[in-house]
Length: 147
Image 1 (tube, rainbow, N blue to C red):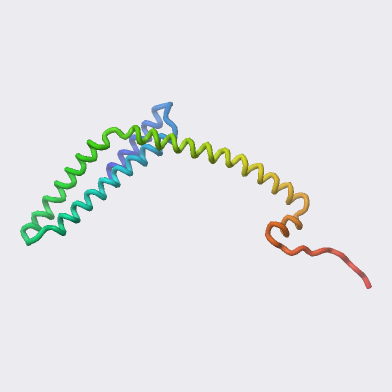
Image 2 (image 1 turned 90 degrees about the vertical axis):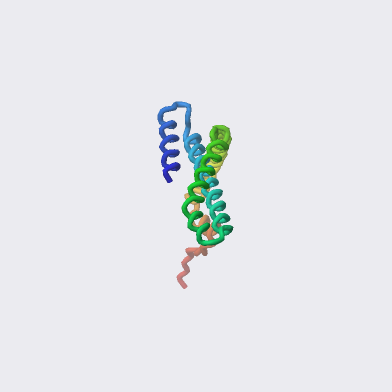
């Protein structure tokens, strides 16, 4: 938890102080850090599970419950620190992809607005027919006959 809090604080400060950074860089940086922390947690949990299942005897279990988790956390932490010491390439790829997605959404929003204007004009022309064609609302014709 502390790692994630520090990561968010670091990336938010970097975003606020660096004019070249965009929200894409903020989100991508935090996402990559969360993925690394998640992978480290899963790795540690797996190793501890295997170690506790493999331990036999009361003395081994007692020693294992005290020493093994500390050693595993330290070893996995060091290994992940070395392996992911520079995540800038991952952050760049993810932030570029976020920019591409945003551009696609914005071009799609323009199409949606044009479609919304068409629907609005059709509704204003003849609301009863529009509701009938769109939602299947029955149309009632107003004809009066006085016989």
